[in-house]
Image (cartoon, rainbow, N blue to C red; front, side):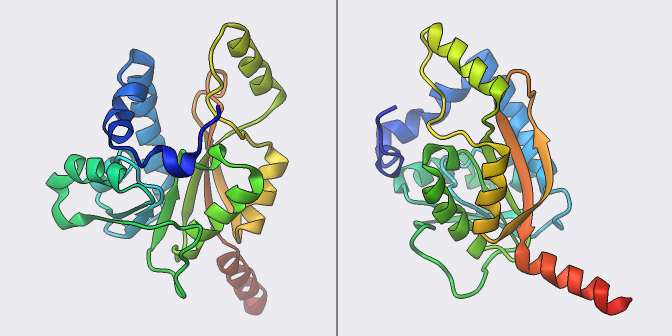
Length: 228
């Protein structure tokens, strides 16, 4: 796909049609339902009423189940048009949902502002070095848990993508990632994997990773050593 993810979603028509184009078919509705459940499960260890950063928030599709589960969510996105859709979708949650236009790649806080963070459906659009830049920005706003999703690149998934190309389908992502690259991405972003989930691995390349900052991992390890 020859398009620029930093600009594509700053179009009002693209924003207004985003969910309908991706999740209105039977397969799309099933995926949407299962992904929302999986994302909520990823935050199971985060106390309810915690404030979660959703970056990028997009249309608020994944912020919605987190709000329903009892969390507060602050959406961050470079597209004001996508956030307009999110505000309309999530208006019923009142001030439990807030949002702002912000590029997490270039705007970093001096201290983490949120209890946890979600980074979904974005990293696979960029080359690995830009993924590190993006995820580092997301990690900088979170005090603890960071949940990401990605497209796994394995021999089986490469075969699936090749068959889909033979059938005339466009590739769904530009930059899927191997397990070795996932380790590199997390470490360079200051994170460590805690848990991992898949979503129907035979038919989907989606992987969901629960991570924590390396500073927390080091503090926990040092505490165990000191207690011995």
